[in-house]
Length: 176
Image (tube, rainbow, N blue to C red; front, side, top):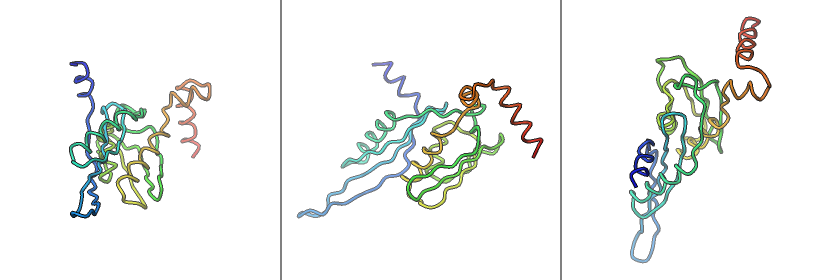
């Protein structure tokens, strides 16, 4: 039992949005709540979940469990930012994520900020366009984060060494 508690405590969860919905019945209105939660270990793993229930704490608990079930791993540069700039979209929501130098901080809107804080990113510049719906913004952010590649994975895919890849990067910057 103690190991389960220790494993759960390594995750940081952030409540992004709560939506109250009403069902009109003969006696009046019945309220239910939907919660959007982002969970991460602040070391490169993050997930989001959606939970619905009649009470807020139950909705948050369901969303947190769903988030822990579908976590993704994101490679980070120096454990603080992304390796490269990337964009993602979901529905009408578009997000642009840019790697930033040390000391920049998290420059991002509400739902995206929650994702980056739980992921462990310290320096990033992000912009969202289109939908301001928190669900679409979180899903668009995850769409972008799924496509982040580390130099190691790119080098292995191309059959090169990481140092060769970095050298080529330097050559193309000099040519430009």
